[in-house]
Image (tube, rainbow, N blue to C red; front, side, top):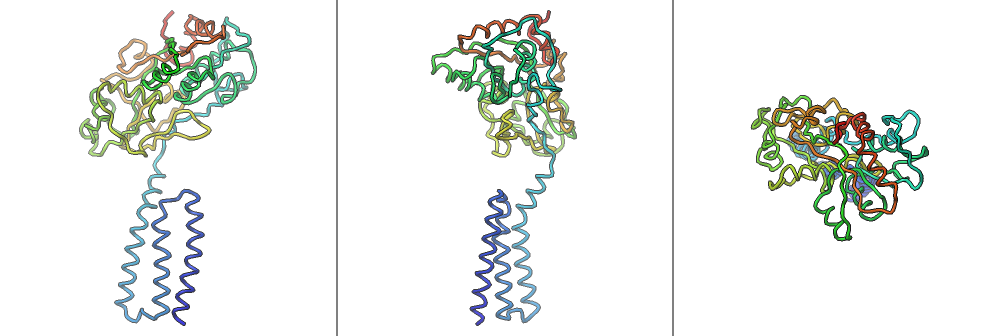
Amino acid sequence: MKIMQTLFVFICLLFFAGIVAFITLLNGLMHYKGLLLVVPISLFLLFTCLIFEWFTTKKRKAWFAGIIGVALVIASIAPIQYHYKMKIPTVDAEIDVFAYEPFVSQNKVVKSQGSLQLEEPVPRIDGATAMYPLYAAFVEATYPKKSYPPYESEVMVNRTPVAYHHLIEGDVDLIFAAAPSESQQKRAEMRGLTLDMVPIGREAFVFFVHHKNNVDNLTLEQVKRIYAGEIPNWREVGGDNIAIRAFQRPADSGSQTTLEKIMEDTPIMEAPTEDVASGMGDIIHEVSKYRNYKNAIGYTFRYYSTNMVGNKEIKLLSIDGVAPTKENIRNGTYPLTSEFYAVTVGTDNPNVTRFVDWIISEEGQTLVDKVGYVPVENF
């Protein structure tokens, strides 16, 4: 009889544990898998001991409670760590691109009436998220007034790798992005294409930390050594005695390509998977967030962090004692300044050349400055 009771308890617990496990795993809560194993086993052992009247002494009860307690504590470590991590503020590396959609009422696009008024066929364009406010302003100044949804029109916005893919595949005539990576260059060459890059503005590549981090400045050499894994602790650069958590971006993204160029021949350390932020643009499919650990360091572009994201929980670091301000980009004193480009690979659309020529004209460069970037030409 007792064996039958034990078997009944086992089947019931197995049934309910299976349902709970299915629901839990379906919702991606893998950090609870330890508890999903320990709790049913503990309950089964408890009912079994009760059925067979094993708890005849206080010593047995204490032993049982101690063993089960230790097992539950160990199984609870992963969920506790997860919920602690979730409470840490994040730095959202994405924006609402629809707020910059051209010709939409009350959008955030900087207004300027251009002397160039394009007619159909307008250039099909794409670009990095960080560039979207700028080329949306170009569009409003020169394109015919109509609807340009950011993911399904002549004016798209994507991550840098996607934009280069669209350009190389002939899906667009022109993209706005940082310089291509080596692999992007090679893919173009394999298709018999030459990437024609026209500089249209300058931007600062910035490193940011938690606003409570007492480090305000790093030398360029220190940055390289941090991302090479040679400086693992903030104490070595004047901060607290805490390990540095250095975020990276995926290969071929504009910011990761820029970091690789900064590092030159110095190998970049391999980052843990959770320390690689997904993307700065593909809003529909994924949201990239740097979880704002107090020991974290990340990187992006100045305009994106200050004008588009504007998160007050982070601060931008000075490099070699120079802050990444617009004026320091303009006068060339900030050391991590790079150009961004209008990139083409050849097109039959006659409006592309007219459009690019207007962008680098006095009128276009004035708009670059007005939007908040630094123009390549000072008129």
